[in-house]
Length: 142
View 1 (cartoon, rainbow, N blue to C red):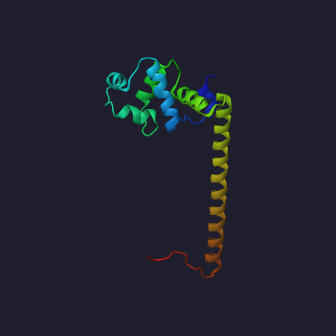
View 2: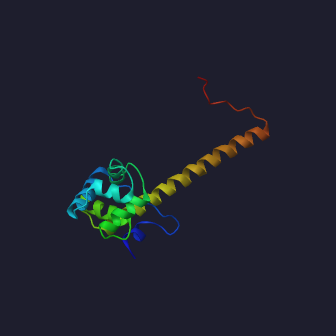
View 3: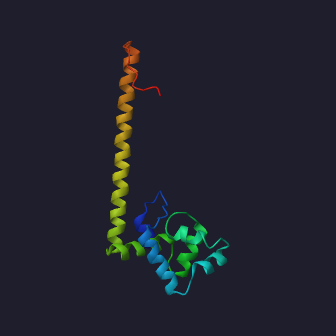
């Protein structure tokens, strides 16, 4: 099982976005292999200005991400970002992958709770309408 499989669930295929510090580390790795952003731009057919946007997580491009992973000898872009994240945070990759999964699960639970609250509120409103009670409008007019 590669690193990207550890950090993503079976149903969703998430491509990670590097932070600024992680992007700097990826840039360092590329330069260590003798690769410059201009060379990478020529190989992938994009402008040299677009490469740093992808490396620093401001834009997405599967073609550029996969080319960088190939140059760095990784199976996927997620492996590149996880290595950078591990180096920047000084934590093992497995710990980072576990933390990401915990955050994702907490976010799912929060969404489920908000949905349940929304449904409950709308059921109460529907019951008031059916019973004939007046409801107070809460929206303000601008």
